[in-house]
Amino acid sequence: MTCGWRLLLVLLLALAAPASHAHEVRPGYLQVQEVSTDVYDVLWKVPARGEYRLSLYVRLPDSCQGKPSHGTFVADAFVERWQAKCPGGLVGKTLGIDGLSATRTDVLARVERLDGTTQTVRLTPERVSFEVTAAPGGLEVARTYLVLGVEHILLGIDHLLFVLGLLFLVGSWKRLVATVTAFTVAHSITLAAATLGLVHVAQAPVEATIALSIMFVAAEIIHGAHGEPRLATRAPWLVAFVFGLLHGFGFAGALREIGLPQKDVPLALLFFNVGVEAGQLLFIAAVVAVFSVLTWLVRARGDDDRGPWRSETLIRTPVAYAIGSIAAFWTVQRVIGFWP
Image (tube, rainbow, N blue to C red; front, top):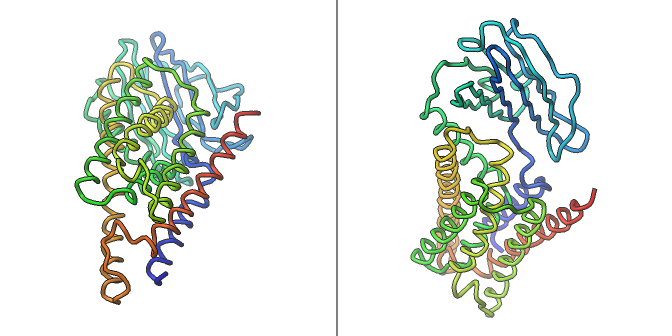
């Protein structure tokens, strides 16, 4: 194995190994719902692991009365609920998250008015507060969920490893386009169906099966490298479509955790999906660029004259074993997580 391929393999392992949970970087979620004049129900979900929660706290205007009395750990979040009375309302006032600037976590904040309209804002360590506006903005919702979609796919190491595996199964640009399109269409179907409540699937088995799908693709890569092409090698678009349906449920689980604005569900769903696709295409472009450069370097050394998709002895097999090993660990970990 050449030095360039060794470096790429090390980078892959460094990227994936720390991600024992593939979605540890989850955003916080703040919902402020107006239930009567100047009275608001507040829901605050803080990312957590086990009994440890991030030190993030909601900052309401000084005029507001009421604070959380207790909270509970639910799945991977610490949840607090309380009611606040804010004389004069919240329009023109500032809401913020204390402690956010010291983290790498984002917070999705949503203010719901009495008339059902909403204001949705994405807070970051660089932007820890926002001003409540009188009128909702569709552009703001679109921008917020577009960014969330991009972040979700780029931080979802399991989805990225599946896409990486698919790239090793294709043999031409035509097959690449067909495979990526099939994956996109499939996960868009299940993402919409699950988010809109048309299909209900338990999230824990979905996450475990997603890990199994990565193991399957890794095994198919290895069989192909050993001269034993199977269905996934002959028709990668079909495998991409079938498992894409499964990955769509994974995307929907993340979107349910974030929440959707009641009056802008189609808009938010559309742009979240567009964001996922944009992030996926960015990843594919980066991988293809790296493979093309490394293949050129290999050819320049006279080590190999094959294209970026079929460098079997140099990269496909070792990377497939790395992907499969990581996916096997995730599978065991997630299956064990079925039981408290």
